Image 1 (cartoon, rainbow, N blue to C red):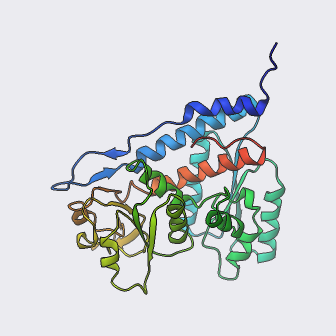
Image 2: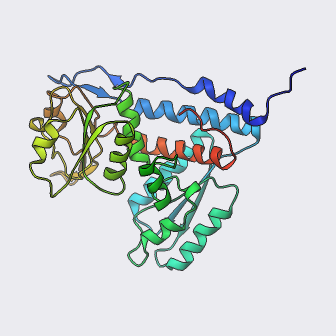
Image 3: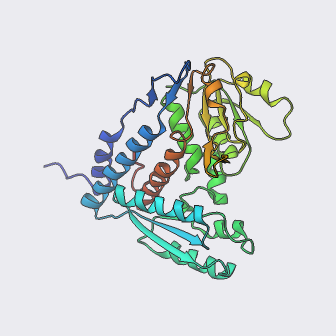
Length: 326
């Protein structure tokens, strides 16, 4: 009689059915807009569903509960909202969630010690420290204290190096989400002329690395670039992550280009409320671009979905299991 498959090979078989393609482009038109609107909510929902399915099989077949620990220092309202949202997403997907809160006067050494405890905790597959941190704490030291194999934000220097040099690491969530959205429009990115507007460590630089790995020809535009509009106009793919509301106008766009808007810019309104705007002037750019992400409802939902993805990847890799097909 043939030998039964090993737990690892059996788990490989469990992963195969979950490679599905999502139709992410909403064909509605906004007014006279001709660009197809990429539905980030739909893509994120599908990814979260796949993460939940595979996490359940990990638990049922291998007795593994995937766990994410979020560290929050201080009482920043936006950070509290983000951490709660991440906890709810974990719960919905069937992942374990650990939330650690510390006062804003915690010492840097004490925070490092808490991170090291999470590194050693076998229940925890992913560790994230919510940014920003209080001014007396060296952000770089805290990030460097996280075990790279649990660094689900993808900010550790080891994971940054892996991203640029080729070996599989954990990739920052927002750039990974942007790449997922691009792949709903383009079957093959090879040879595409891609422009990344912004060079931050959190989005711009890792986005450029991912596009290079996808065989795009990549240009990074930043505050010192000459004639940013002219550079953007030649792009087949434009990823806007400059942090300036509606900076990108229709005159910046190559007709038919795919535009990914990473910007989340709260803009005050006369009545005292605020409105969130992207880095792209959506209404005007829609008349030129071939496909575009809205704000909200585009890149934003992908960030937390990719955080769950990274946590599941970390759980599998820590146990010598193959990467799920996500």
